[in-house]
Amino acid sequence: MARPSFTARLVNPPFHDPGLLISFQYQRRAMFFDLGDLHALSPRDLLKISHVFVTHTHMDHFVGFDTLLRVSLGREKELHLFGPAGFFERVEGKLAGYTWNLVDEYPYNLQLRVTEVGEERCRTRRYLCKDRFLRAGNEEETPFTRILVKEPAFRVEAALLDHRIACLGLSLIEEFSVNIDKEALNALGLPVGPWLTTFKKAVAEKKDPDQAFSVVWEEEGKILRERTFRLGELTEKIARISPGRKVTYLTDLLGSPENLENAVDLARDADHLFVEAAFLDRDRETAKTKCHLTAKEAGTLARKAGVKQITLFHFSPRYTELEEEITREAMEAFGKR
Ligand SMILES: [Zn+2]
Ligand SMILES: [Zn+2]
Image 1 (tube, protein in one colour):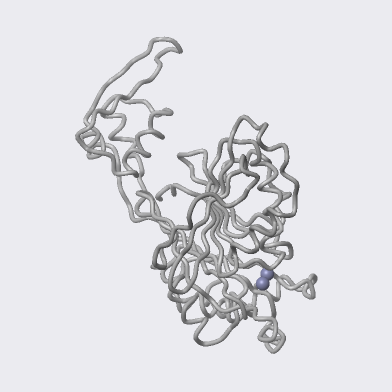
Image 2: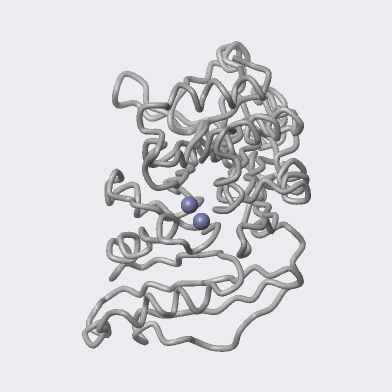
């Protein structure tokens, strides 16, 4: 079984605010899909965040912005935030809500890079803490291609969905994952150890195969040993490369045919789909009015997209005693139990 390079988990239980925490294993780094209430997380978790993708700025998806900003203040850090149309105004409004007269005393500088995702183009603005979060420099503009972030090891894709306002659907797609063949490792006489993290990272980032890679380890607690390989040679011997995982996050969308089709497209073949199941099918009229999915719609779209596993969240508080019924309805439509 391939060990994934990241883990994804909901920040809160399904009746509380939405939010998905994605942690990368080889790096002290994480990302958020949505910024609901973040009090369940430690400052240590929050400080790992490099990228935040906000589906839309209804309060239950954005109230955590202040918590994240509070922890990040006075740190040397660049924080990337993405959101749909109107996002600049919302972020600037948040930043304008506080007094910043002492920030020039901070030794480190926090920088926000905020991207507003539109149908045609993405626009990015920068805000520096030391400048009291006034906008810095010119706005940058790129065409919207679905891909919001692309790094050697993964990419983040978005779809623009309808929640009577624009709402982002999000997928994290790993390019491939790297696993270590323990027998091959033994055959080379190399021990497991922290060097494997560096090694997997180098492979995942497609570093030059001709570059030297040194394996350093301790024997009997003190003798330092070292062996050097070509990265490509070591990769061939001990690394097993498998297709990467895909995680999709869908919440707050109207169950219209067009929206569902776009959502299915985004979630196609995902290993794990996190999907809202706000209402029961018997309340589908309310679901339509409030622009949310029913459990049945969530399960159906997961089946159509061919996803392997689903996790439901964002249940309406009216069903506090009916969690099992929501799950049953969605799983029946999904066709798996
Ligand atoms: Zn909403
Ligand atoms: Zn919501």
